[in-house]
Length: 120
Image (tube, rainbow, N blue to C red; front, side):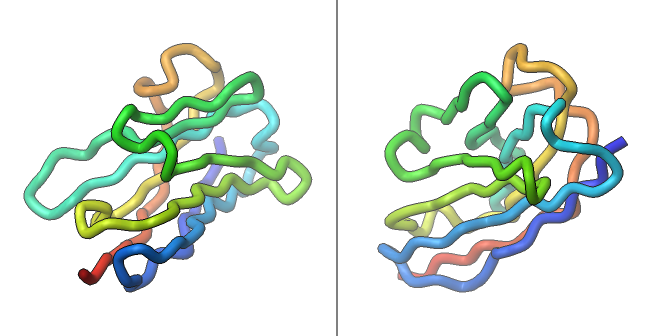
């Protein structure tokens, strides 16, 4: 079982960039796909982006601004968010799965989340 801890969330101004980090312990991330999700106040959790050992996937609305990456040596996965907008305000979660199928769903274990707040 992989334990995931997100970090990097903070208050930012619209137009800024920030990088979220998902640190994994308990197993090597080399064998996992990692998904990024977010949940805004009063809304359902939604898929943002994911990265496997084969490919990356981004939600259509996230393409061009959200970029997932991974550092297997450090057992971390990152989510770069460029040109943030107020709608990006949410709690961001990372989650893992042991396959590379349908990267938008089917995740097993989740981190506790990190808060991103965008001020306009």
